[in-house]
Image (cartoon, rainbow, N blue to C red; front, top):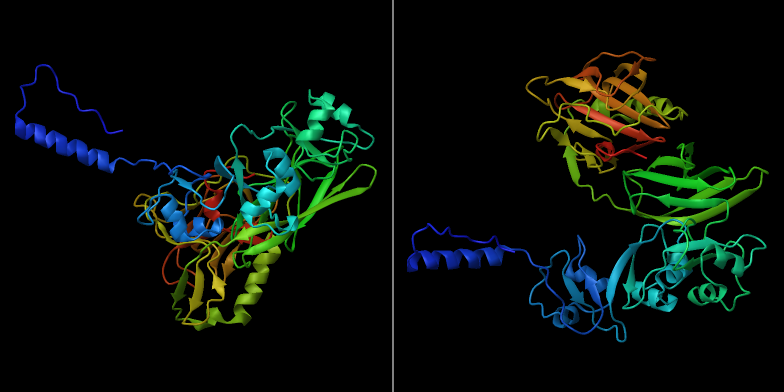
Amino acid sequence: MPAALTISRSAKPFNSKMRKTIIITLIILALLTPRVVAAQAGGPVYIVQEGDTLWSIASRFNVSLDALMAANGLTNGNLQVGQQLVIPGLEGLTGILDTEVVGFGDSLRGLARRSQVDIALLQRLNHIISPSELYVGVSLIVPQQNGTASLPASTTAAKGETLLELAVKQDSDAWTLSALNGLAGTWSALPGDTLYSPTGSAAAFASGLPSAFQSASVKALPLKQGGTAEIIVKPANGAIISGFLADRSLHFFDMGDGNQAALQGVHAMLEPGVYPLHLDATLLDGSIQSYEQMVLVASGNYPLYSITVNDVTTLDPAVIEPEYQQILNVVTPVNPQRYWQEPFRSPVDDVPNNITAWFGDRRSYNNGVYSNFHSGVDYCVCSEAKPYDIYAPAPGMVVLSEKLFVRGNATLIDHGHGIYSGFWHQEETYVTVGQMVAAGQLIGKIGGTGRVTGPHLHWEIWVNGVQVDPLDWLDVLIP
């Protein structure tokens, strides 16, 4: 709403020129004030999300661009987040077309039961040919129909447990559970099958997971190139969790609240697509229960940059590979001790525009092919007060401190649980191998050693043997 215009009682009466100025001002304010545009009547409504375009919405619902614009009285492609659009061609469907990201353990049947939407309708709206296409991290259209609400509670039948017993736990009855979950009858509940109800405890079991998993989730979906996957599992009966994501073995650690967590970097050059997330739960009796689902990895949309390097010896694979292998050998061990308990801080004094190169940028050297990527974040000489100081972003143990050919004066800090920080091209390093450092401790000085085009700090973070975007670790506690 435009700001109200008030005139005090002591003010002098205003003339026609003043009235005209006020009217023009109010008109301008009204035109500049953002408004959520309501959809035209007739048909289900989709609410525009960040990043949506008319073309992407039309493609998602398999309607023509002209039909979508005509149904909503649009004359151009301008959209606002929160704007309501009628989706034509979905006869018999009303209400809001909401979006929901598929979580680990979700199944098409589970989503249909929880949302109380027919499976055939979910498949139709999302162009799903087979239930196996339900990948973790994919955003689905889930209609919120008038008078129908999602079921907030779930329960899973144990071996030998009847539907009546489950109903009692959920403060419901066997006939209600049977009807809401599309069972053939009150006798047809199967062990391990997740059922939803409008009453009872909040969902504790992700649908489709074996009984050894009380819950399992993957944060920040969909995963992205260069991102950090956070996999949180709450096992039942003291089970030990292991597994792999794509081709990387996962290392789970106790979080102290009954959950186990694994952190895994997603390589910046991994092709966008779907990859397996496989989990094993080893029970106290030695038996193993497993679950696997495909997880979507999205593009990081990294730009291309061409770099000119005068000293071509630093581009020689015979020089690059041994040094890279040396670094990889240092960051491969997974320390069971976790040293950080707070979000990472910047390794330099924060000032505007101090980042000169971002993580993930595709690199071509001396007009060669774009077969490399920038594996960290580059900081220039960063402040007037202490322009060259480098600080530890989090507590840890120094595991490398020496001069390398490509990386110059280099330092690596082990933060525990497979997390390492690397600092390259320093003028000086102030720490030694085996030394413990605290967050914010002065550890070195920005310089221009190694393969550089000028003085700067190159900062990397490794997560279980893979370089990730360090900026994802700032100001947020992971996991």
